[in-house]
Structures are given as C-alpha cells and as structure tokens.
Image (cartoon, rainbow, N blue to C red; front, side):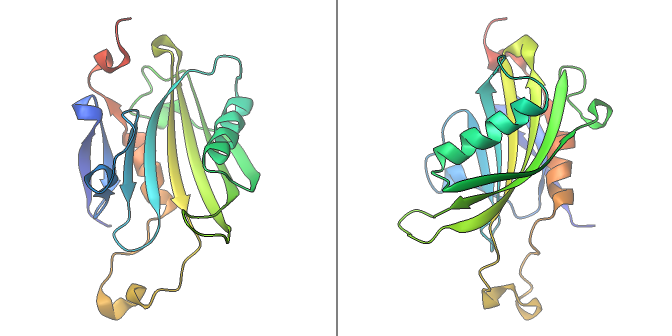
Amino acid sequence: MEPTTDCPLFGGAFSAILPMGAIDVSDLRPVPDNQEVFCHPVTDQSLIVELLELQAHVRGEAAARYHFEDVGGVQGARAVHVESVQPLSLENLALRGCCQEAWVLSGKQQIAKENQQVAKDVTLHQALLRLPQYQTDLLLTFNQPPPDNRSSLGPENLSPAPWSLGDFEQLVTSLTLHDPNIFGPQ
C-alpha cells in the first residue's frame, strides 16, 4: 500500500490523509481561504477541499448536482455531465458525528486550461458532506484530467503513480474536524 500522510488543513482546524507526494498548491500560487488545494507531482490531478455556505434550498442528490454544476460554471466548463450520484454511508466518515448527509458524484466537465483554446473532458469525483449545524457544505473534489502521455510517467523514471479513487476515498473518510471555531460563533 502506498504511504500516506495525515495533513493539517485550514490551519489545523481539520486534518485528512493525503496521498504521498501531494503538493500544497498554496506554496505555488494564491488559494482562496475557504479552499485547500493539492496537486500530484507529475500528473495534472488535483484534490480540493472547500468550505462552502450551506445551500439549504437543495437537498439530497440535488445538492450534489448543484455543487457539481456550480464548479463547472466557475471553471467555465463548456459542458457538464453527471455520470452517477450515490449516497455515502455516514458510518465510514470520521466526520459522522457532525455530518447529517453525504453524497458522492462522478461526472465529466469539458474544460479548457488557462490560456488554451482546446477543452478537454476532465473526470471529476466529488464528495459533498453537509454540516447544517455549522451552515456549511464541505465539498471535496478529485480532478482527473485525461493523461497527457508524458514520457515521464514511465516506470524507468520511478515517478509517483497517478492517484486513484481509493486515494480520494481515503481523503474523504479520514477528514476530521479538530476545531469547530473555524465556522465562527455558533
């Protein structure tokens, strides 16, 4: 099994197990305060943890779809397609004590990278953890762009393997709240 690291998030208010080699994007460029973003050292994969305002007007599967489509709009996706939405068992979550509802969505968005005209189909896996007592929707996203056929991914270079759905699942299930004060006065 690939080694992993338990990483503090949001100044230690949360922690989660990240895949080995995950690079904190905030060390490379500015990242909004409500996000933690990590990128793979070789592939274009990324993992994002976002603290969002609770969207109380949508419930259940519709809430997962709402956030997926919202991310598509923010990224300027030319097309969005939901492939599946499934409830996520709360008993598997470290956040089960404060999470009232959880969903996993998989889909594709057609997105052009900055300064590029050609849009690519990016596979997104999202987990939505709803924390209504904190007026928060926690959105975790695993971006899987298509492989760009870089030769650096060859075994002779001992490059880190691309992240898997198992890595994303471990991030989601290990996410732990340490300091509820991150949500402000309750």
